[in-house]
Length: 124
Image 1 (cartoon, one colour):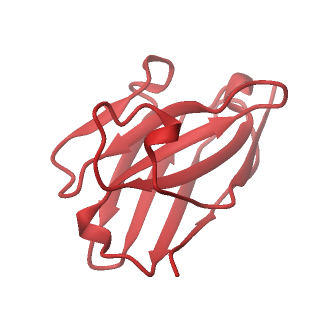
Image 2 (image 1 turned 180 degrees about the horizontal axis):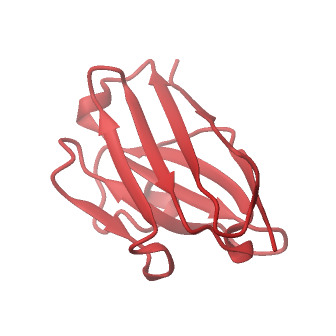
């Protein structure tokens, strides 16, 4: 049984930082590209970042470039999202997801497995 468990969310003031973690089990972690998505109330789930199996390639949506950094530790079956200079518009539930094969890594429906999400709230 595959499980992805996010942690590290919380309430932070604008300009602050958070580090999200996603611990994976039940799959061969190093065979999967890991993605981060977020969903704000009333909005569709949107791509945030993706990191390929070895971590060589990392993709970001434009709105987080320079502020968010994705990384992974294949020995710990864990992927991270370091977020700095947070803005109120970053407020959302953040999800990690795993995909074996994808054409773009940016499309949610291509992902095979999902975590339950962790809430990030940025106050102004």
